[in-house]
Length: 371
Image (cartoon, rainbow, N blue to C red; front, side, top):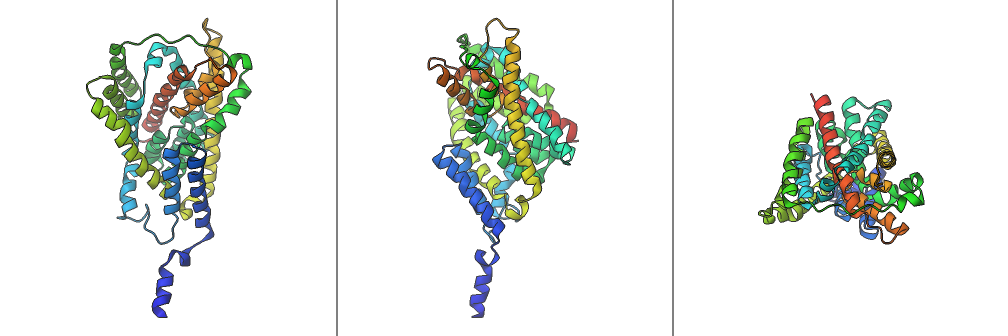
């Protein structure tokens, strides 16, 4: 009987608390969204499973020094995983539309306003400057950048910030359409844009070098993120490193995404995650995303006042960094208004500009607050 009692006391059932159940249900809900709704399944399924794994009482988790999950989480804690993911994104990305129509860069830049608006909001709620900067990056809808900055400025908030960032990335098809429709008229949503000019191979190869040098000189603290992004693009566009580009955009990024999602999910242990701070971060993240979307659309409308060839203001919403989800949302809305209106390539310009913009914004914040 004594041995039986000792066994029972070692089980998770003995140490179970209702807060663990809350987090397990939340994890299962993430998996549900990924599988049944197809909301960023490559992210939500491993994150959701990680949330379940991290909330089994008695199991070794990311906070137990020397455990397997703790060692894997080092890639998040030390900022290793985000640059690798950026390289994969660069190897997937075609910058042609941005090169052909560089004025669309301003739409990607405008959407970053959500970052700084949320930064101010977080300060108002009592977060420190460093914590507020890490929270603000959620407004860029860029998961890797959010994790990168949080690991540098607010390591204790990495789990909450990462979950919020990836949640809103997954919910792009739900959050953005109402905001876009509210701020645009039917006539504006039907605007057709001229097909972008053909971009030469030389331009495609030169762009990542020029882009990296300029952006990293502006924000040296983000040079590793920007460097890996543009390196991945060079591997893709050079034409002589296809094997490396294929590895970066497939096997490598997929492997890192699995580990990143699992460990970030596992970091949401109930006693660490279920706090007022986490709720505030989720609320601020929603606000950040809404502001970034709205400012992108409104800025596109402002730009149209000075352009002869109008841009469809919906593409301003793609300035958030959720690549390529936000561009797809814009394209889908355009198709609903006019089945022959193809906006995907146009929307990809501010979309990839948003990726660069959020990394630059993170670098600026890190250089100021990371000292």
